[in-house]
Length: 281
Ligand code: NAP
Image (tube, rainbow, N blue to C red):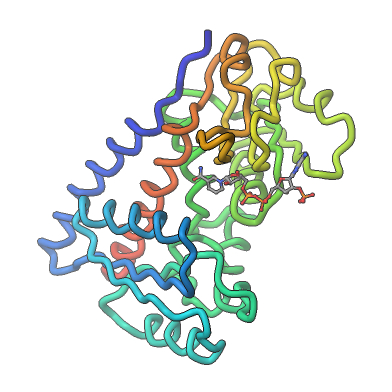
């Protein structure tokens, strides 16, 4: 039976450490602050933003929310981002996705000052990650790496297979694993004979958004299995991995919920603290 990687506990520990760092920053006159922009009223986004606000509160990070109406123009959105870029009291800017279709999310992400880009989506941060320079790293992939580290899972020289190549999860995570000296293979919707590839993995990451896609016959015995997926299956929250059966053969596995999910918010908090610290000369 696999050891369960407890993301909830680890996230709690990280938040506690961050609280101490925030107290120290405050004693030096710096109050870390995150601003979140939400355009339109997406129900799931409201829940995500509420969770981020709660986490900020708990750690002592100031939180400012900008709720813009559905009909917001490109000029209004970019104008607000520019204002936040200029404000010295704001260290992190996050644009909650999705935004309405008439707006270009890439253009909006690109207009955020990369030094305040706590989501790690700006091309400068993506580029820095690719060349192995210090940068803001996308929170979910950063959370996965933190979990591997916490559980003493050595990545160097291992075969890592990542299913999914999105800009926010699959690609940055593959890059992080490569930077940590794993031999990385990325699978996507056009990949053929996927099970043959996944069966080779010492570390298998599922980030595709298909409930219980990874079944036991796709997993090598004693593999480390990381489930990034968040799906609704008959009202229940399930991951991309058939947990019940894969748990029996893996050496480590992350549950859903309580695995990667809580780590994402913790890493966002970490990025805000990092942004605030970087303002100290
Ligand atoms: P996404 O943008 O939809 O990307 C999905 C990726 O999976 C794409 O690269 C796609 O390939 C690939 N894919 C789809 N079907 C496939 C199949 N049958 N076989 C192989 N690859 C397939 O999704 P995402 O934003 O990366 O998110 C992935 C999952 O993680 C979702 O369930 C999401 O809810 C979850 N998520 C969780 C967290 C967290 O905090 N835990 C954070 C972010 C996302 P193509 O590129 O060829 O289309």
